[in-house]
Length: 198
Image (cartoon, rainbow, N blue to C red; front, side, top):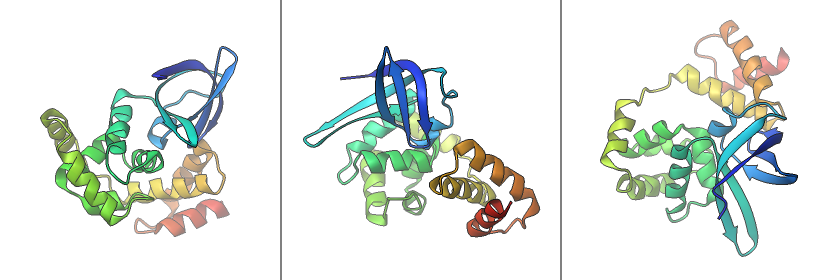
């Protein structure tokens, strides 16, 4: 089992990185929450990993924090949740937001994550609630500051630009530039259109 990798970050994309560890290039799939905290390309990098081996597939998943990897492993223990869905959950919400949604039974919030339907969200709430320690649950609820609608629109617009091929830093900069010029009630589509026209 590979538990972490330390090497040179040679390639960096929103859901995938390549680490050069003593001349061997490891492809590692990462959630956006970890991607945001990675160093620049050609810099030293250390990732905690989860080694997923299946009959027809062998993939490494990487995380910047222990909490992210732990939650990823908990999500994999839920029936119907595979690595892709678990990664999507960690890309859509922070560890604290995910735990807060589980503790509050907020199925609507969980099902707003790309790739997670209502039934899967309900299973996550039911199965994960018992697995979170009392301390984790308390911490999640105590620190669960609801992101504003504007913050959520900005995040969704950034993800939309990334899916269109923009680098994360460029997408964030474009959205930061156009948001002040738009009405506070601007939709995600309007934000993206404005960013593309800029």
